[in-house]
Each structure stands twice: as C-alpha cells, then as structure tokens.
Length: 369
Image 1 (cartoon, rainbow, N blue to C red):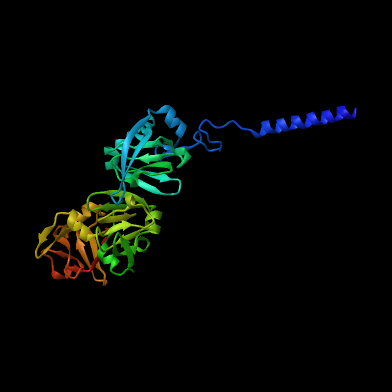
Image 2 (tube, rainbow, N blue to C red):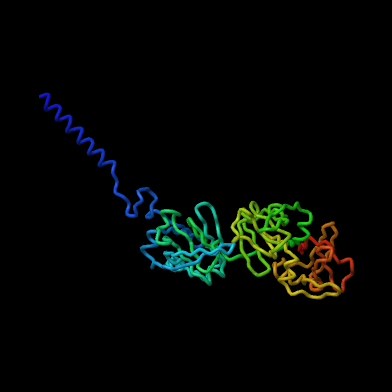
C-alpha cells in the first residue's frame, strides 16, 4: 500500500511538471520575435484635417501594396554618401488608397517616435517618390528601428526619417490679412542679441518668443525671399526658435533643437494673426527696386500687396523714436522704403513734404476708417 502511494505521488509530480512546462512554453512568432508589439502590431498613423487619422500596420504595407526594391544613396549635410538597398511600399500608393494624390499635397511632416520632425515641401512631393521602407540591406527594420523608415531617393538624408510613427498632411501655407506691419531691422535694434553658432561662424540672433507678435492664433506663417513659404506651429516657433540677424543667409529662422529641414533661410517676412514683420534687406532681393527721387528701394504698394495689408483710408507710420506721420491711401504709391547707409529703415514719399519722411521706421498701422 505504501509502495502504491509512493508511485501515485511520483506520477502526480511528473504530471505537474509536464503541465507547468506546457503552460510556460509559447509558439515563437513568425518573425522570430517573441515579444508583444512585433511586426503585426507595428503601425504608422497618417493624419490630416480632412482625412482624420488612418492607421496602417507594417504587415498591411507588405500584404496590400506592391513591394518596391531600389538601390539608393543617402547624402548628409557634410556631403558624405551611404548606399543602401531598400524594400518597402510607395507612399503615393497608400495615399491613392485613401483618395489622395501625393502631388496635390502642399506639404507633409514626418514624425519619429523620439519626437524628431521633418517637413517635406510641395516641390519634393511633386518630384520624388517616397518609400515607406520596412527592409534595408535585406534586414527587417522592425528588429532595429520600429516600425519603418521614410526614404526619399534623390533628396538629402534629413528627409530619411527613422522610427517613423506618423505622417501629417499639412494644409497649404496661408497668412491672414495684416493690419500692423513691422520692419525686422528696426524691431531687433532694441532686442537682446545672443551668440548663435552657424556652422563655423558665430553670428547674432534674437529669440522668437521676444518678437512683438500677438498671442492670438496657434500658427505662424513664414516666407523666404526665394518664395518658399510654410506654416509653423506657434509653440515650436516661439519656444524653440531664433531669428539669426547676422552672417550668411540672414535673417534666418532656425534652432539648434530643430532639424535643418525646418529652418527658413533668407527670411522675407513672418505673420501671426494680423501682425507681420518684414525684412527690408530680403525685400530688396524679392521685390523689384524702384527709384523715387534720391532713394532706391521698395514700393510701399508692393509690400502691401505681398502681406495683404488691410484696406484703410489712412495709415500711421511710426519710427523707433516715437515720431509719427499719417499718410492717406491715395499717397501710398509715392512711398518707397529703403535702408540708409546708417542702417536705418527709412520711408520717403516723392512729392510730399519732407516731414513725411520717417527714419528708423518700425511700424505701419492701418487706421480704422
């Protein structure tokens, strides 16, 4: 009896061990990854104002879209080249499935899992394919940089965003009508300057958050003298940005915390709500200079047209020292803005009294009718 009891106990222990082993074992994932959050669950979000949010997994990219294989070359800001063999799905085909044409988009923004962002402008969207790569050099990316990498053949590596988790479809860059226009050179003359290292040069810059822009509106419009324009989130512009005011490509919107693809060199003007700030230095490159009397500069009417200045019967021109003069709408065409040898932004009106000339011009305000 005692012997049978011992056998029973032994059999029970064996069965218990077998049951525990069975419960503790798991079928390996098809991709060899036993962790949750494997390839089947990895996804990116495509988001836009009209689209809402659309999630697509890496597995769906492989299953639904024709694979594209291409040998590509990445070129960084230093000119160094790296060659890769990539495999993935075309972003344009994903968009087509959502009823969107890539070439019709004004811009998109890649967002990485670590918060890195890169805006892709319209000219790149029109000219280049974008590959949502899930395999590089024969190795699945989900094992290294989840979930995929954006590849833009023919463009600098700053657009090749790793750990891509979101693609934002941006609205066309627009600016509101301006009722108060300021001039950058005069604005920054009274601001605190900071040293800013720009490549091998130490230039001067001012903080964007110190610019006299209104609190209203959560978007800032930026335009360069080469015609590039974009909308930037006010939070990013104000909290992380600088306006570099000396040295190469100045004025320039940039930040050491932002990727270079988000910088705007040779900044013509910025706008927030109904306030604009324009650089006369870049305006002389952007507009066709004219000769009015002894001054060569930019027509007031050209500037007003560019910034969509509010219509008014009278405008108030104000200098940094507080001097003011009112100019009627009918006399605007006589006005020209230029920079004196002393560096002062100046406006003069051909045929009007000398007291209408404003040295150190800082603001033009549309007066209420």
